[in-house]
Length: 102
Length: 233
Image (cartoon, rainbow over all chains, first blue to last red; front, side, top):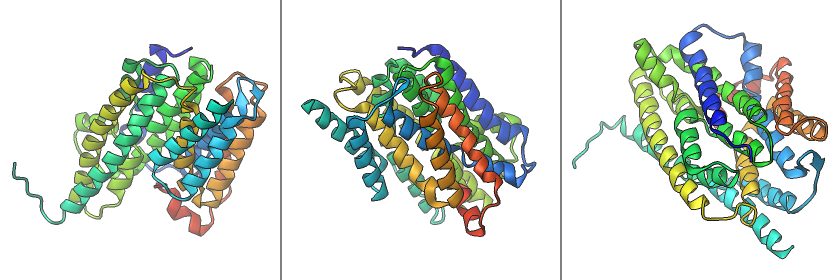
């Protein structure tokens, strides 16, 4: 496992730097429309990447397993606008139940 | 204790508290998931206290949990943290305080405080909305993380499907971003890049590379798009 304090420290410094950059350094100067439009798409691109990458790959190879069913249940739950915590529990529980059979 | 709020302040405080309560429950999940991905209780708590931006914290833990390097984990997580810079831009005109206070306020510039603050109509309520949300949400986010991390230490992450718990959290966070055409294109592009690159580059890098999909924003937004891209909530 690669978890380390270095990650915690660098991520904290970086996250604060971004918050401060917009808030204190750039201040009320305005970014070009096209730039802020692109930046606001970061969550859409990265969250979708995290969803698909963590569902269909295992290390550096492709994999199709219980996680895909768990993902399907989570998508339905999120689409029905259930609260985030319920979506999390349904996705995890579905996968846990399927794993207990295999 | 008797505690009276003016009528116009009451709904602002009430929604800040309700939002913070929901986020606190999510923090519980983050704590469990972080420990499941290999963090210890203190690392999970330090992330919530010092990094304090949910999607980045989760993203870093996913990459670590799937065997990625610290560098790989940082890339995607920092890119996600980059949007707080854009929120900061949107909020800074409302803050004309001293530099010290602005430096403190900067730590709390996240999705929720931005949404709460920009929803108010006058400067006084905007300030109340920002600080009430910041304080309540920060407290509950950290408390929830601690409880979750302690709880998570007691269970086996694979058996309980915690890896898919992460995925499910991303799904729920992704949905509001799919309201716009550009959001849908960016999501589809990001997903495609992250899967296609997976066999060829180190773990974590496909997540960072998926950021290239934001350039779909170069095409002009349809007029109905622009309003909802402000803060997806």
